[in-house]
Image (cartoon, rainbow, N blue to C red; front, top):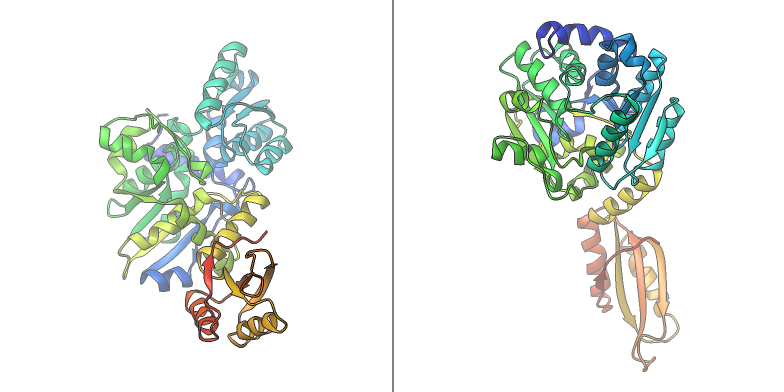
Amino acid sequence: MESLTLESFEQASEIVKKVTLPTKLVYSEYLSKETGGKIYLKPENMQYTGAYKVRGSYYKISRMSEEERERGLITASAGNHAQGVAYAAQQFGCKATIVMPTVTPLIKVNRTKSYGAEVILHGDVYDDACAYALKLAEEKGYTFVHPFDDLEVATGQGSIAMEIVQELPTVDYILAPIGGGGLITGVSTLAKMLNPKIKVIGVEPKAAASMTAAFNAGEPVTLDSADTIADGTAVKRVGENIFPYAKENIDEILLVEDDELIGAFLDMVENHKMVVENSGLLTVAALKQMNLKGKKAVAILSGGNMDVITMSSIVQHGLIQRDRIFSVSVLLPDKAGELVRVAKTIADAKGNVIKLEHNQFVSTNRNAAVELRITMEAFGTEHKNEILQALEDEGLRPREISAKLY
């Protein structure tokens, strides 16, 4: 059976039910209020393997011959496809070898191993890992499962669109992240078959906009670099096989800066109690670029596999970015009671001091100046400005400095 036909999408949608959890749409009151539309989230971060990738992998392996499976499978992945293939291979009882870039977060490496796959770390980015996996496939006769440039894999990913349209038949927009293009190809192709009026919007990290580059050139091109915190979508070149379908069915591509993903992470954690990885946040961050008044939009949250160290760093940056944590330096005469005066001024303005550094040696004339560096919590920009004003009114002349929590 050919892929990317309505029949194959229907078949894939049934087959993937064996390995997926039902990720029902989540209505986001917060994002709906922000955008003026009705915003729903498709939480693929809640899948067994923490991402949508198991759909394409499982469907692909289900279409293989016994002989192809017995040779053993190999793939390359920055993490989510790795877990998808490893889990799907385990279900079919076949051996899987996964080549991952050396910078892959530990949680993704360990999870992949936990599904019984052999993991080889090689290269700095996905593209290096992929070249090595293809070499091994040739040398050892393994069956290669491409993470995105495969029509059967894209068909499996398209099952997401089937579920969205069944649950919300009147959807106006579906937003999907783009790395190599497998997800958006499956989703956009099926969405247009089911209802040509649905607009499918792709979202890329600005620093790894390989589909945008391909659209501009009329064919896939290789970017010089793909340096983004959205590691799951850090792909330098989109797929050749899927590109014609993507070009035909994607309505628009939006680009998102890394900084915007930090705020989106906080929004998800605080308002939805959900951990979503950076690539999965692209669709959420892109909503504010669109005019969604009176429209129904579904943002696909492609995955939630983020290690705790990355998470803590993003939370810190996010709090600083939103003026919920900030630092100031004030110069005080070196005499008793000055520290109390500063502390009282901050307390009266309802600021909360997290850290104090008192440096007596900032000036040779200690009577003139001792530096006090204060890191504190505020409710946001407005509150921060009130605290700064209170310090100013007290004659303390605060100077804002870059905040550090460590």
